[in-house]
Length: 77
Image 1: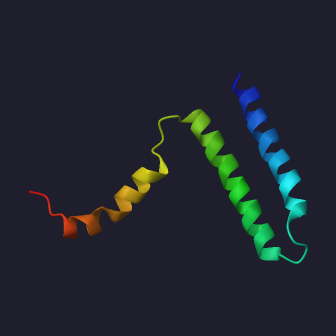
Image 2 (image 1 turned 180 degrees about the vertical axis):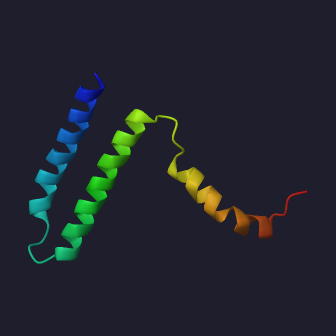
């Protein structure tokens, strides 16, 4: 069952890439690289969430990174 889900996610990512990539401007090399990297990252995150559904979300990462700054403005206790 998980192999079918992996295949579905991979086919969906490939379809998105195949549909949108040719529509980018011909001379936009950096945009094409950025699009490929973002698409690959989304695909990898989707596969990771299949295997580890309790992974923390992006907001938890932002909260962890900005906690020292917030502690300056709102000290605890």
